[in-house]
Image (cartoon, rainbow, N blue to C red; front, side, top):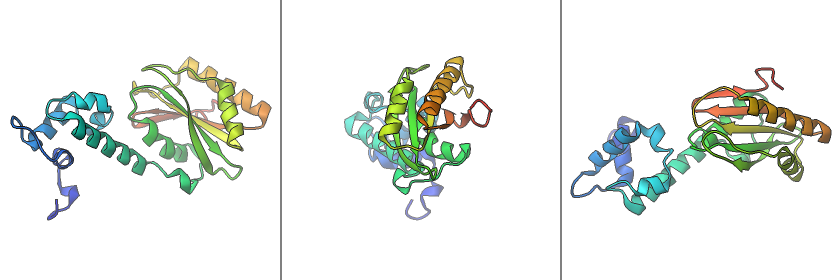
Length: 209
């Protein structure tokens, strides 16, 4: 890595550097390759929690924590820092913010992004965490958070862990209820983004708002 740079290394070799050591039975490079093979590549491996990783033979608590911390740092680097207050004026700009937060989660999470009147993102709040296929969201809680954050408008986003980039009837109904609440309070719903792996759905782009 020192001689040729990180880009010259395989995913297995990069993972081996994080793990540092293997076991008596398996050298560290073999351990790294076995993990990637078992989970089907780095994209699936990063979705594993500390509890899952710690049970893997040859890892243990310290290596599992190291991996989870590394994966979380990668997500944060990939995400636009909220302190920069990025402007969100299109679905593509919204996806750039929300995708790193939602793409690798195994359960549904529902987030609300708060925009000021200049369309700058001033905060993000998780309002619900659910199961593999659904999450329960209360539109009144969404709007309560919007008021607390002095939002001029909001964008909501959630993930489909199944990878299905298609809105459900429940998604449509919830979006309409949030949009109606926003109209009453004068806090418009700019968009609803569904993140499904590398794909996404924008309700605004599909004319559903």
